[in-house]
Length: 275
Length: 298
Image 1 (cartoon, rainbow over the protein chains, first blue to last red):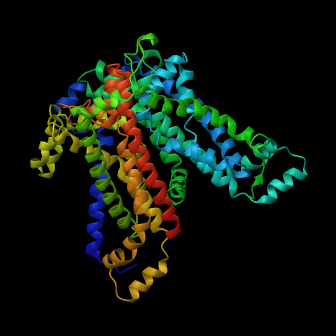
Image 2: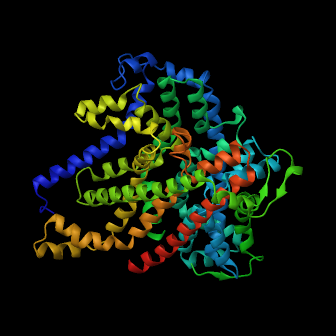
Image 3: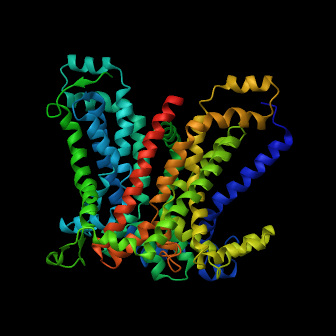
């Protein structure tokens, strides 16, 4: 690969470097702003903090109610995640293991969710959840997230269908029930898929803004993403506090991304190839 | 694993029913409900006020100038954001596949915007572009590109605001497009490149005559995924401009929200939502078709 000339290489690095700065700078700016006094932000909006301080984080967590919002996000996201994993793994296994008359139709029904986007069913969902008495409740929004199983079902069905037949046969000979095969034999063999589905689902649910906006108007139930809106309203020109809130909200996702990047990549390439 | 043939109710149902139930109750019901609600007139207070009016809401849509503006904005947004996002993603994918030293690090970094919550992105860019704070001005002044600082004022212009949103969507989504292209690039047989080298091709020519033609199969996938994501935007316009100024950034989802949730015109808002659903399904249909083609090409 020595055919690429030095000049080309320099140009390529330059372009990619600029792009890198453009990608990273907004996040970098938010972080440095969060450690400044708001007065310092106005004085020098782009410089590094002269006297770094944690006061914004303290204020946001207590007076800005972010401790509450963050906790709500953790509770809602974790429980929804576990639920989605169970539901999607089971359904994916069902589609992989069995063939029945309506299997294609049912699978297609699940795939419909890829086009039924949240922003197009907001109104009806609001009315439906209120009708069910689940408005402004944590269980209510969790149930909505539990319907986000399509991605997981696709991934799990793919993974389970690649398991060798002998494993299932051996388990049956050992007297295992179908459910037993699923739990004790199949599931442990698809750990990478579990990781990938878990990561993506966590990120999507944690980041979601639409459902908290529509279904959680009670301030005590709000998530971090919705809380940012309240924060912005409460602390109008206080960019420092707002930035602290932003950092608190994107930190968990960023950490998971860095630590588990391998699983992100694996899931993406699989998804891109198989669709 | 070979599949076991069994009727639904003696085997498969244990595994599939739970997910199916939740899915039907919390996604299919609101989906059908949206269509149903679009046929009524209701201000959302008491159930007694519900009046069935058939297709009247749709007739009102036809004469609603803001609706047509929001539709136009949605389409412009989708076309421009997709073009920007996919072109950038393609270029980056090709550049990264030149096997540079820090290629993996860069690839990982370029994907970061895609995992940030849209509300964070909206608020962050709002801060960055805020003229009072002047962050954008300062940066551009440092690089000597002051002329571009007018970008910050675009958010206040009815005609130009949407272009800011388009740029932000490109920033957010190009990582996805990049990944789709990289995945396909990694599958290209290296012998093709070697053959081209033997014929004396430079890196540029190898890209032009080997890589790009072979990416044609996956291009529809990249385009359509980007289009789906762009069609359904709500959060960024909602939080940055609330559809303004003067409906300049009003898109289908925000207009539906305004009517259906904010003004409590449940029926009318639902009708707008139905049109959004229809567009989503048309796009979805094309994605499924494109996937079929993509698979046979590989």
